[in-house]
View 1 (cartoon, helix red, strand yellow):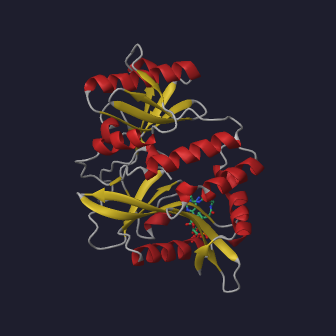
View 2 (tube, rainbow, N blue to C red; view 1 turned 90 degrees about the vertical axis):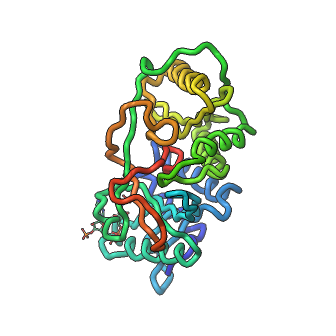
Length: 307
Ligand SMILES: CC(C)(COP(=O)(O)OP(=O)(O)OC[C@H]1O[C@@H](n2cnc3c(N)ncnc32)[C@H](O)[C@@H]1OP(=O)(O)O)[C@@H](O)C(=O)NCCC(=O)NCCS
């Protein structure tokens, strides 16, 4: 049976995924971070923790499920986002994760979803057998010297800037025909919640999460050695240079030598990009009518979409 995890099952699931996706956080802090995120108002109705259980009710496998909006070839899509699929080691290789994924996809299809998306960290053949196909998955690593110098004209993003940022990101995708996920406000709000809860788990206070320039913006997070651009957009070339220059300043101020981004939207053709080796984007149709990219086909997925 597929159902929402109970509180105790959530804790067991978080403990199970901590060694894989814990990002260096101590276990208790990771558990608190995941619990707060799951209970946040932004999660409501859009983010669920699902479990696959035996007839006796024992938890066999678990996953994160996101109710996403997207589009492809100008057709609006409801998309099931799948994350952090996990089966406890002693229960593996019995088909539990596959059965759970099939049930979650059937459920989403019954609720009106036309596609499913995930970012695979394992051999993609596993998900291929479940109906997924690998689509464009590239990454750019940019050095400071490739970014323009600017003197001012931007500031750090603050609480309340989410709406303006979403508007800019959304406008940049307005005439998009490639497979992309919506910038309806929720994606930015949810990722910001994630960054805030992560900062709280690290006792770091309010995180630095973005920058606003006149007619441009970028949402960022700090990797161990990189500055990661979750998404960025601008209305004109001047604003583009301001945003890129602000990213350069941010790198220099925080000692990051590389900027990391997925080339999507207005970030698409700015820098050389190479195939990614992790978080490989895969999509599966849940309805015949869904105009999804073919295998290897182009997408407009930015790091902001990585769930
Ligand atoms: C991946 C995982 C969820 C599979 O759970 P499961 O209940 O054992 O899955 P199933 O029984 O449906 O399928 C087992 C298959 O998973 C595949 N598989 C498991 N781990 C894999 C890996 N690292 N790379 C590729 N395939 C893998 C194998 O093909 C295996 O089939 P086999 O027994 O014929 O070799 C489980 O191994 C796990 O929790 N791993 C750690 C978390 C993780 O990496 N999740 C995936 C994130 S994208």
